[in-house]
Image 1 (tube, rainbow, N blue to C red):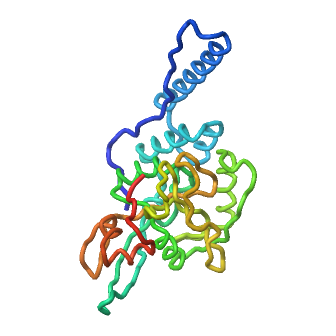
Image 2: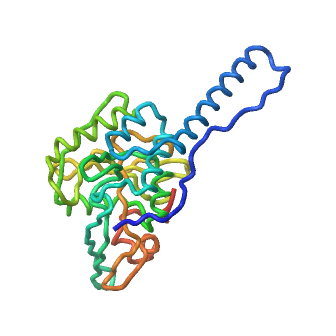
Length: 290
């Protein structure tokens, strides 16, 4: 079960700008626009601190309807810190991985993963919220969890109790309104079914240095498996790390892993010279955080 620690998520705020008085008039006007936008951003950030937090998923999306990714992330993290997270995200279920090493020895790993994707609200009124990998990393750090790999996403899909078909949307993909619309579509598909769920989101994943190709400030995504078991989204690192749209989801894995009955750390396992094959199918060193 995920238990949050007491810490205050850092709110995002734009920096103010200082301009010289001898700038040409068009630069002065541009400067004033930037200052006004910055002040508005800081006021919105302060309102997140001072206003009462939403208690349900519906209210979250109503409040965040006009937010950009920074403020949507911040509000979601504040709700997590306040414990306004439904039990269906806190509860974890076992996923099993097997391998045989070059000496013929068999290995079995038992990992615990969240049954669903990151969400806020209550048991009766919750909503899945796509967030950036930076926000996901903050949650992982607070809960001693980590993001999955491509192989883990595949294993989760194979062992999922509830498999739903992806529903792609094509307009305003990164808007909060479309995120809410897509979540309501998922609930219409789910029809109250319970258990480990798959097929509803592309996972934000940990990946290898080979996949990043020397680039930084990117997000790796993978998955969204169809009913035939094939993912719509191959492993992809083309988006900047602040980009998030309705199809992205955050699933977490407990870092405490059992390997042939011995306790190991998931992050250490990812770069183990032999046993890494239990949790990743990628060559190269795994990048362990965002």
